[in-house]
Length: 398
Image 1 (cartoon, rainbow, N blue to C red):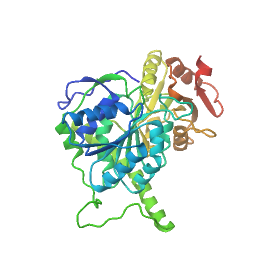
Image 2: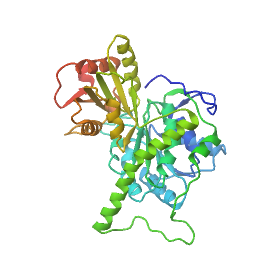
Image 3: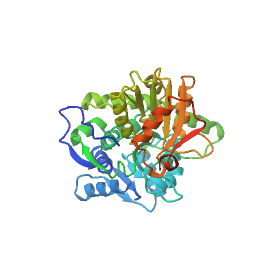
Image 4: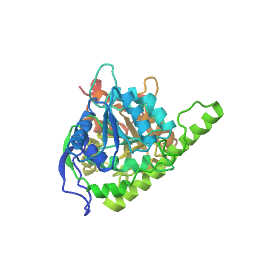
């Protein structure tokens, strides 16, 4: 994770304070006007619930916090609430997200605009409470929009943006804001919040056409369909997922216009003349940035592209960010045993024919990505391409 980066000067930001990513996202949920918050605790997501329940107890929000019997029940309640006409958010991690996946597919198919905050954690077995992206990757093909944070400030900003994206009439899909478990959820750093009124104005009221609980209006959701109707409705959901890329950038630009901070679908870091680049997601990109600064000072032309919006995959933005860079290493924090990992597959397909693109797997089960390992990746990009996947794990470093 990177050092805290000061928020660009703007009159609307409050005085910085020390918060964890979990606390920051809970503040964003409260400010965004969540009305129903169905939850079930699981490490490392639990501090989100703890913080939000404090807001409820202190009368800082009128939201209904539903403590249900499982994550499956939490997502089921979220679907009913969102389609019934209430702004709805939830949070989960790891095995809890795995238990939710059945209903996440239903939420996307029924076009329920639910915001989900995920504290990424490895799936068992063996049991791990630390970060990788195997949990959120379970839902990558469900139709849910997926956004990945680098630090607590991004987790806050993206959670503020998420309802606008989810509830856009051309999207109407769940939006998942991901942050690295423990690295972001539990690590305290300097975060600037916005005033409640500014967030409320930015997000706006919850307006869902054809809400199920609208008096005098009959609606149907989640019914059985024959293949022709299923195919048509699935294609509409898929088209909405693609539309979410445009909507994401519109919302990010409006956030920048109002508050002075832009979080685009990708971030190009020192890519202007890069000969070697890394493509990755999440908190470890901060470590890579620090290595880049040191290598740049030594005359090395290296850069980084951080993929922030993973679903829908930002193909055009990635192509623009990579430009003419001839050597690219894609670093994944989730494996797909038996084939290439997910970020590499999307990046390779997007950049096919653009040059030398190599696959690396790091950080599984929370294993640290060390600065010397990052340097070794950049050095390897000078030499012949390795076969299949290069594993940046204990066997290479310890």
